[in-house]
Length: 240
Length: 240
Image (cartoon, rainbow over all chains, first blue to last red; front, side, top):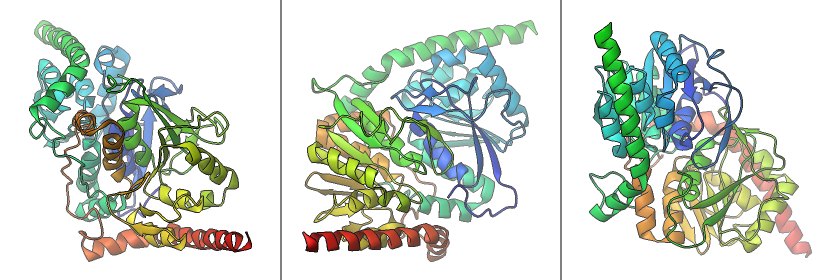
């Protein structure tokens, strides 16, 4: 269907970072919600395919050079192992550059670590995947595992599947409640999770322990890099 | 992370049909849940990229020729406009061939129309996207818009976002509740939909009317092709 009949004359323009190791569903939920109402750009350094953390190969539509500025939404999804990209100067510069003129600067899951490493969450509250909250805090960000957090023109979702909630919430901001509701119905977002326990607030202690242990090496690396990036940024601020 | 530590020695083998016009999130939810516990094959006629209904370009890993048979799961996701593929003999033959030796034959959203057109839902109950129920019925399938339907070795999800529920439910079948719960927590599937109304049972009448009107041309085409395919299959059965 490509695009739904627009409720406003101008289709949305959305810049979505994609990268090796990304979690596909972080991207897929927001991309559907926003892509039904405009043009989404899938942006990486090159036009070579990027492969997700579970092995799905996706082709970028734009590079950092060709991605439009002046977008309605800048979006960054997460990854199981996002740490390496936090240190990538080219990516951080790209995010800062697009954020300058974006109407909304947004993320899902550990995408907040990338925005935070770029300095785009200084003084903002942001959601993050529950396991990586301490990494986001190490960047000096007011981090939470709330499903959705809105703070001025920052909108962020919690882990992975929160991208669907994010997509509908972002649409409500941009196009109003009526359009968001119609889109939620088209996406049939009337969830019935097979189990209670999709967040540590709800999960059995044993389940949380196993999940925490599985993610521990990635979280540790996230905290290590976040601490180093946070320190560097503080030193630069003092020197300036 | 690629794969979680396996609770069974043998990683899952999963065949996932991908195709031009597919809805990415139908595929992304199941792919994450199952891909964390095994190898997912993303299968199309050729290795050329397929572009989703909202413009995401994905590269197949396998063709109909190279896709393994004897898989744990055959999975078919949906599309806004699935009708054309129901008439594609090569695809129907591929689905029938893999289903013969698959442990589970499964779908999300309008993927059920493809399984149904291949004759793989004869005598089975199946879920489908709410808007396309009549198309699935035109194939002679006992269709419902329930979030998840299990009927012997058929497991099916409702529209689009039901792929996440499907993925966790499929894992519970294959690996047990404990593994499914850990995976649900890693995917942070503790949904908080921004609005009530993700299914026509819950939505305001006006919202359902707008969504129904938007999807009407695709649904009409689905019913037309399903009726023709259903009639042909009945005639072949009588002739045999």
